[in-house]
Amino acid sequence: MKNTCQALLLALVSAAIAAPADAPYFGKWKVNSSKSQANQIMTIEKEPSGNFRYENAGFTYTFQLDGKEYPAPDGSTVSFKALNENTWDATIQANGKLSARVKLTLSGDTISVASTIPQADGKEIAQTGTFKRVSGGPGFMGKWKPTKVDAGDFWIELTPDGSDGLKIAGPNSLCVAKFDGKPYPMSGSGDGSKQTMSFRKTGATSFEAITYLDGKVFFKDVYAVSADGKVLTDTGTPAATKKPVKTIFDRQ
Image 1 (cartoon, rainbow, N blue to C red):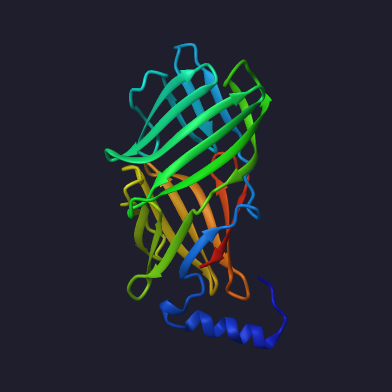
Image 2 (cartoon, one colour):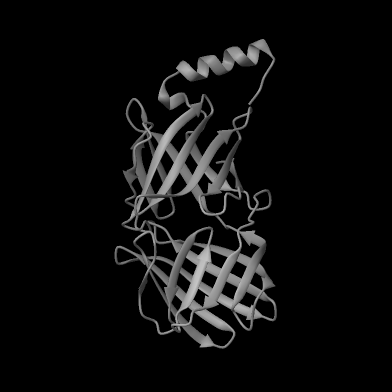
């Protein structure tokens, strides 16, 4: 952020040398879906082998509609069932525990997605999305662009950990790390065994987070807090597409 006001510059300098607990990004934040942007293309296709292939922002796996578990890049597993020609059910598990349930419903050139994410307190977060066909077919096959996404009550919480560390938590995700640029394991009930994260401060009010899948960079996020401390903006860039995604969080 570029500032010319001397008072604001002094405030930023003060924040930079303050104790970690004073960093403005620490706290609990909830997604503001109406202000966030979803623009990554989802691809579903049938391979010559007979497997289905799913891809979104470089996250790719193959599966069958037989209810069996198939591996995903982060170490989780996915299983799909076709309830009928227009409805698929999917279950995502990590380390043998439920990570999410997803239902895809096809209507012409539109796919409606409804998912639930379990939380530690036993409650679930409901999310919905709508995708329009960009190309391909028939049925679920093709490329799909999101037109509306509602993340529901999805939240993240950032808390200091020691003199130069943080704990970043979500509904079923957790990472405890330091701001040293080194990868740290994810240990939440919904985190895949091959997923790690690293963190690096980029300013008094911002930091960078990199997500790795099996040791390879998957996503780069920059979290920055607004001047009034009420809004946290996550600008994320998938390594595969280089197409930024913006997620807005409101302080709780």
